[in-house]
Every structure is written in structure tokens, then in C-alpha cells.
Image 1 (cartoon, protein in one colour):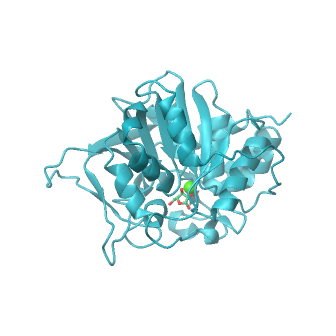
Image 2: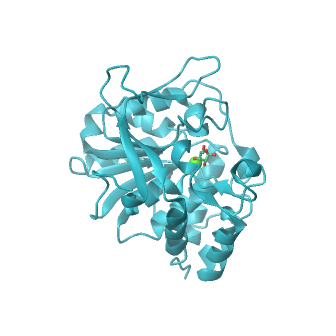
Length: 324
Ligand code: BDR
Ligand code: CA
């Protein structure tokens, strides 16, 4: 597989916007374990899989567990821009990290809110320096785009886990959770004019973890790996049989794996719009595969992954983590 204009070898400065969330946790841990390639400027939390207070706590807990207590974690939007909140407690549990024993984080709390943190970080950066990686509903990022359009040139790229085209939806027949949870925000981000790479269900459904992956992670690393390994087991509410026995997709880490090893993925540049009104299609991502709209492509849509290699990478990275 190839991407002709993939992320390349230089160290990336990123902000990770997330709603941990079981697969968000794997994405956070993979990013933290990859400091040679990824400079994590900070994490911003958004309401999504579980309410904001819990996603924010989980992100702080994960940084501490993984041995990076100094990474700043900022709380963001506690509800979507327009619609009523939805959660994915069925898949992630009430704690958001079902299968993991979560402790209350011990470190000091960041009082600056997510949008302010992202704006300040962009303001202090060079043009096209910061990559925004979003693996939850896009509310925080949409607020940045709306409130700080002058800072958009500082954004090198936006890498999103969200949406679906050929795979169909996982919340409704047409919509994937992150876009469905805040379609108005997704529409703003998808139209913001910065380079956009989208890891939707079309690709994440090719990255299927099985118990053997969890066992390898538990056996091959330090305390963080051992404690996070259950997250590679299919969640209680997952649609196992659809993917084969005891296999379930690992969505969010695809974004980080793509930054690390773009050659594991294939992409296509396409025009994409977000449906914000349809009765049956609210929150769907409409991909113009055949160029029938005549619109210029606004997204690099990830179409394929070497799923086993992505999982190998994630396991190898998280196994490096130590909690002193
Ligand atoms: C997305 O929805 C969430 O439940 C996961 O964390 C992931 O970001 C997959 O549709
Ligand atoms: Ca997520």
C-alpha cells in the first residue's frame, strides 16, 4: 500500500482531541509511546462516548498510567453544537474504559478550556506546524474553526477518526458515531479548508483485534501494557459475529498508526459532505467517489489498512511504556 503524500519521517507536533473511550485509550497510549516521532503538545477532551467529566478524567488517568503525568489535558465541550448529546456507554461501559481499573488522577487540574488551549498553541506556532488529531465528536475543533479562523493557517493537517461510506454506519444504517454525535461540528471541520485525512469505518473495520492481541500486549510489556491489554478484547456491547468470532474493530489508533507508518494505509482524495438534516441519513458522510458533484476534493479518505500490521505496531509501541 502507499500514500504518495503521507506524513513522512519528521517529528509531528500534535494535539489529540478525544473522548476516552476504550479505543481512544489505545490511541493515547500509542501516541505517548511514540515520542520520537510524535510531540504530543496536549490532549483535549470532549463529551462523546461518555460525558465530559469522565472523558476528561480518563485522559488524565491514562497519561499518569502511561508515565506521562505532565502532558496537559484540557476539558472541552460538554455537549454538541446543536443536537442533544448521545453516548456510547453500551460499548465503552459507564467508566468509558470497561475492563480497566480506573484510578482518580492525582496531578493538578488544567483550568484552561480546550478551545483556549488549542487556540493558544496554534497562535504560538509557525504556519502549518500543528496537526490536530480528532478521535471523538468534532465539537471542540469546530469551535476553534468558528472562533479563530485567523489561526487556521497554523494547522498543518486535521486527521479524523469518523464517518463511513462503503462500510455503512454503526449508530444508524447511514452514520458513524463520532459524526452522528455532532454532525454540525463535523460539517464545519470538513469544510474548513485545511488538509483533512479521514479514517472512517471503511478502514477501521479492517483493523480487527482478537483476544490473542490482548494476550500478547499483556505478556510483552510493562504495567501500562498489562493494564490496558483488556481494551483489545471485544467490548461487551460489540457486534462480534459481524467481524468473525471474538474480533472487534480498533478505530481510533488508526489515526496515530497512520502518522507513524503511512505505508500501512491506502487513501483516495475525494469530495466529502456531512449530512446535517436527513431523517434517515443525519450524520452520514457523503463521499463523491465518481466526481459527479464537480467539487474539488476536500479530504484524503483512507480506504485500506494492513490491519495486522497496524495492530503489531500498536502492541509494540504500548509495550514500551513504563510507569516509574
Ligand atoms: C468511534 O466511536 C467511538 O465509540 C469510538 O471511540 C470511535 O472514536 C467509532 O465509531
Ligand atoms: Ca473515540
